[in-house]
Length: 281
Image (cartoon, rainbow, N blue to C red; front, top):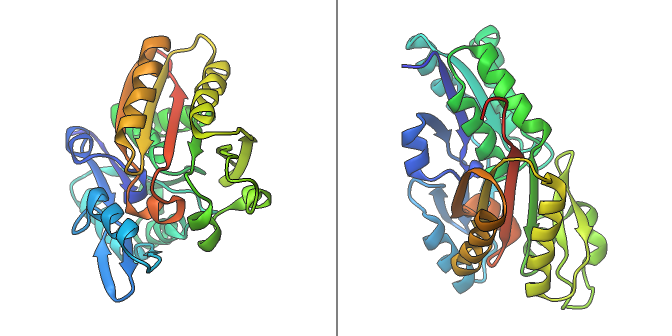
């Protein structure tokens, strides 16, 4: 058993297969539709969530885990003789990082490192994977996560600004609300908040432009990459196939934007996360 337990939260959008393969502990957030309450990934899948979202009129609400839930996970790992690296959604979008940090202080701060990814979805997930693959010592895992974070990037396209606006997660893209419907900007996260990379007219053109900007940013470097979708698998698979055919990928994942992030971005969202290959890869 490796000396380090990697912990993340369900906003990382890691599949069950990836979690099992790399022994990553996922602490779930929760989502509610009115009086109906669900634990993300436990009793509500992404497919079920988007069916409810498209078919209902109630806007979902999300809630972070308690510090006590993180404390349970940390104590279990320490009792097994393992130190912890815990990597979470941007502190500017959720209180999850603060809850994890409080739990670490309560339990054993010398043996628990809590990382603010300043990112979302597989931006968080790719950092967790970097730590999971370099986890013999706390220093090794910390170095891998921080090195991956230096080149971490996320682009995303939303079908509508309705969900981001209503949930207050729109950041510097707020100026686009009420713009012409055909404007489909490429969005990103800068220091943990949403910003516009470029305004593009039309969905297909925005997808093409997102890939162009991605390739410009990574140059000839090898990358870890993930393509995410919110109930738009066909479009995501098409983009990932193009990436794998034109970019030197260390690994490439296709996955769902889960219920927590999907509550704020809405159905039809496409996301692209990446970081450059680590030394020796």
